[in-house]
Image (cartoon, rainbow, N blue to C red; front, side, top):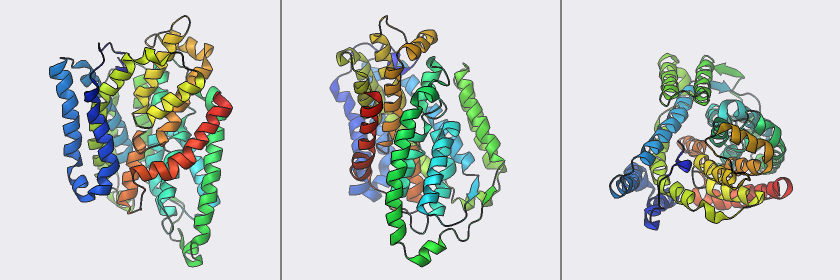
Length: 433
């Protein structure tokens, strides 16, 4: 049963929310204030914050169910992230020609489309290394930030495979093609605006680069795909994801994903991974940090669920911004379920999340509200490094490539607030209001 619809009893005390806040704060300022100490000790800090929450629920409340469910979600999340990371790390996509602003826009647009077939995680892991290579002579942090905006988040809102919140909606009864039919105008608007802004920024960056550097870009690359057999392992992983939707018990899809990753790692030519500068450090960072995030999220979702009746009867625009603002800092999947549960309960007659037929009726009878919740969860996941799983993984790969990335707050104040948020506000005002 989803954590957002569990009956966990009375709300936890406010102090138990502190581990989540402290963990977010540490992720934000730790690399800035004490970078060396942070990179040595962040696993221990994440585990300590998780231990506080676990102690409260296991000893203070004697409730193991929410922790068990959170652990299962974490293992499913890491299995998906990890298997795609390993498999796509065995695919080397060669790119040729000068990385002009127009070519970059086309690349990002293709990545956004591909996210609907491979999921944002799959598309991001497949394309981030070619993206870095094709721009390697003039790459800056904004190239990676817009990749996160488009490929790792916004692009994947047209199918349930595209992003975890939409997949959860599909599992609960939302028809498979509902997202395509109802969300495509928002997708077109936000994608077009983001690509237009990127084109302007990249044109300035391109003109500033000396002519020899511009001519040198990707001169040694050719259009070549190595490790193509790993595409079959990607399909196996996506099949395992869909198997979960068909009602497979927990653990079976995860085992299939893990087996696909192990076979890929065993039978892929090591020189291909060497060309990709493949190593496990980015995955290790994501695993440790999200262990703490998933654990400390339990009292946050618990509190939101208990007090959901105090939200009143939000408008569609309010649903959009409430889901979005929380999805930027919480995992967007349980945030989606929390507000979907609220919307179902407020419907007349009330619907229930555990009844797929009623959820399908809600999608048909109240598509604007469901669209607002879906778009808020998917789009605003790009607002911070921790809003969606692939974001932090992409950042870690960029850090490993020695690209100067914005800090946690730098990402928010230099890119999210001045660029992404105004575009998303405009989308809400024009298409949701």
